[in-house]
Image 1 (cartoon, helix red, strand yellow):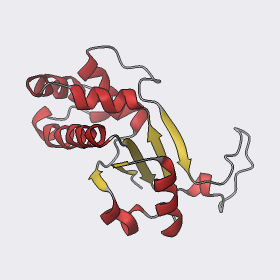
Image 2 (image 1 turned 90 degrees about the vertical axis):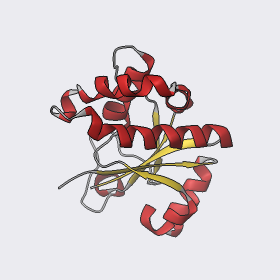
Image 3 (image 1 turned 90 degrees about the horizontal axis):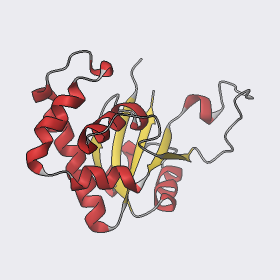
Image 4 (image 1 turned 45 degrees about the horizontal axis):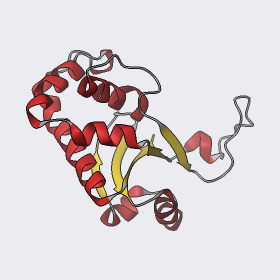
Length: 162
């Protein structure tokens, strides 16, 4: 089972929640309403965080990319549950609003700095020795998305499903 992640931009969390509520949590159903980048297995905190760290030329840390859960809207269970197979927090999908610092780091990277940042990103353990030239198009899409979001005064969001 793989984890699917899509990144997109929107004016605010309320807009995202309304769209997901109308589509029973499916981003695919509302994809035409958003500017979306498909990024399989690129979770915000670790893998995207490592790209942001490379862009900022600093070590990765767990809190580098802030991500606030906005979907599902049901109260999130505590660490001890209750968890059951019908709980949307156990089954997903999930959506997160990313902090502006990550958006801005991606948006502000100079074009001539992108290949080096992607080379460093490719060294992350999660990539298992990926070729930076294979990751460059995805990094370019994420950077372009962040630039469009910033120019429009919008936020970045990540939608995740199993």
